[in-house]
Structure formats: C-alpha cells, structure tokens
Length: 300
Image (cartoon, rainbow, N blue to C red):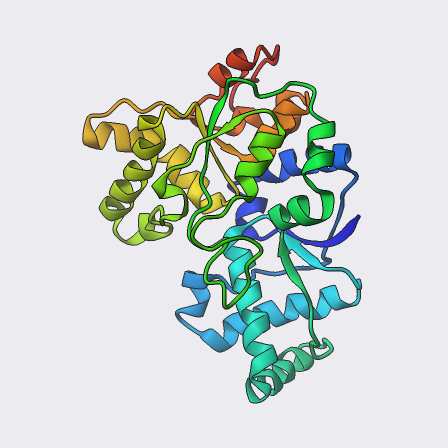
C-alpha cells in the first residue's frame, strides 16, 4: 500500500516521535509513505487562514498540484493538516471562481492547476485499508490489563461536512485499534473535546483548564495512559502536564502516547524506534505493566 505523504510542520519539528513510530509501524504493516517532494505548510488553520484565506488555500493547492503527479492519495499524520487540506479541497471543488483565482496563483509559481485529490488521515488508512484483523495478527505483546483512553480531539472527525471517516461525536477507530492490540478502551465524555489547541500562545490559562479537564477525565476513570493522533493535542496533554499540575496543585502523572507508539509497543518494537525518549511524561510504567523489557534512552 502506497500513499503520498504530507508530513506537515509539527511532525517535522516538535512531533518527530510521531513520525518515527509511524514509520516503524509501517514496516510491520507493509505501508509505504512516499514524501511529497518540496511540500510546504498546509496553510495552517490559525497562523495563515485567519490572516489571509487566499494565501492559505494557495499553500494547500501547491501541495495538491505536486502530489497529483504521484497518482496517490495524500496521507498526513497531523489532525490540523488533515482538516486544513481537506477543507481547502472542498472549497476549491465547490467554488469554481475561487479555484480559478487559486490556480492562477500557483500557475504563476510554475505549477499546474489542481484537479481533485483525496486527502486522508493515517488513522483512516489503518482502519479502512489495513484493517483490525491485520493489526491484531502482528501483536507480540498483548496490551492485556492496560486501560487506554483514546483522545481524538476536535479536528480529526469534525465537522463531518468537510471530511469524516468516523462518527463525529462518538468516534471508535482508535478504540477498536486498542482492542485489536488486546487493551481495554476507556469510554469517556472528553474524547472529542478541544484541548485548547493554539490558545497556548494567546491565552494559556484557558488552555491549561481545558487540558486539565481532559487529563482528569481519563485519570478518574482509571486510565493508564491517553493516546492521541494529533501533535497539538499531544503537546498540550504531555508537555504542559507538569505546568497544569503546578498551576492547580494536582498530581496527574498520565503518560500521553501517540497511538502509533502504543501500536509499536504491542508489535514488540524498541524504544528507540518509537521515539519514547522524547515523551515528557515517561511511559516507563506502561512498559513495566506490559512486562516489556524496553529501556528508554535519556532525553537528548
């Protein structure tokens, strides 16, 4: 299975462990992600689109134009990139006048006008192309006794009018992957609530409270860890967790994993392959609970 891979800025920078663990899982599941040559920022929901929508759409269209020559679906790991690219595709396909304007912009940059391209999230590929049966067949360390809280965030499956491969209010794709790995999926109300996202840059106090509620929602259910498919969500839940503990006088200590890291653990892959040393809240107790003899290298 081959796909045109759009990394996005976060995965290339702050979320390298997400890409690393994905590539390791790909080897097990026979998935090939071929990076789009000379890709650029997707057009970013907040940083670009809110300021200059036409520029945002043109950035997305440039990626579409390059990827179309590959004759493959575009696949991305980032929920925000998935939303931004999917929205751009929908807007361009439904507004011929807008599409003409954007195509002229990228044509002036030396690229061919865009046609129609399919944008997908990596989780969609695992669920609908690979399937739960194949995932289960590759389990070497069953997640028996591990209670996992899948956190989808607000951009992966909503709004359904743009693009959705799962139920927008009650998604199950990660839950079913956890179950295929032998773990127990925890059902809780916060799984699609916003973590505060980029409010960390404009009003951090609001983000801290929103993220705290998600963390406590999972902890109060007895979850051993939270898994997510979104770099921004992972940053707030993981990197900001100690700050939340300090701000509210709490002790949470909740490991936050990318769902690909959890899959890699169950597939018997090593700590280095999965980038576990980059996680801020150590996942070592998860490994101990699974009986996995994996040493987590010091943070670099």
